[in-house]
Image 1: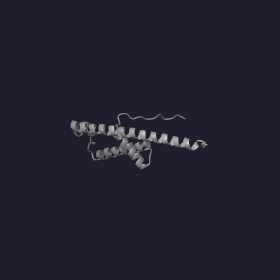
Image 2: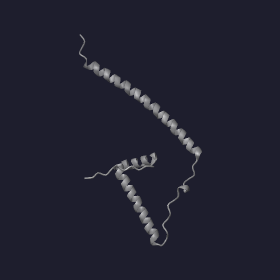
Image 3: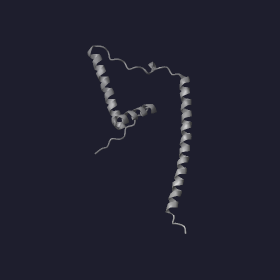
Image 4: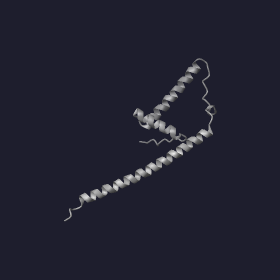
Length: 122
């Protein structure tokens, strides 16, 4: 019995992946099942739209061009990058503090366990 190799889609940005993961979790499905259903639903909707347009003799609507997207505001992008850098630094600082606190707790638990398992003095 042949197995299907894993499928990897390149060019999907992190935000899109996170959105898909959250949507899959919210629907109680695995990411793969959710993506398969989303792709099928989109393809079916496109086919229905094309069929409806063509049934009246109208040409199918062209796909929107990438150039028609909102213009890029370099200043806004720079602001977002700065905010992300600050958030990342703060997150790393909190992570380091948490790691140190957990290490201290672990040492305390080890010392307590050793103390409790040591034979009574005397």
